[in-house]
Length: 82
Image (cartoon, rainbow, N blue to C red; front, side, top):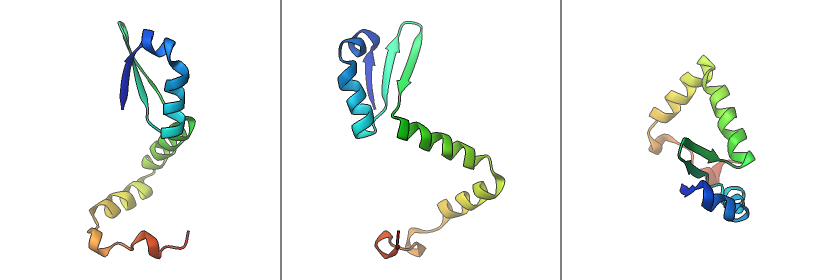
């Protein structure tokens, strides 16, 4: 994750926005009174969706079970029909 000052962000904001959108890499903008994080809309929407799902008890239990499942027992992504 890239970090920059607010002064540098102002000078190169177009470059930073390209980085955020094209490469899905958030940018931290540092200021004297606190910091801000710039996210792409896609990243933001995914983050919100994840948070919304994580408050659902059933989904959260399934997610914890999936995380605990050994990789050897998982199906390879090449075998899944998307």
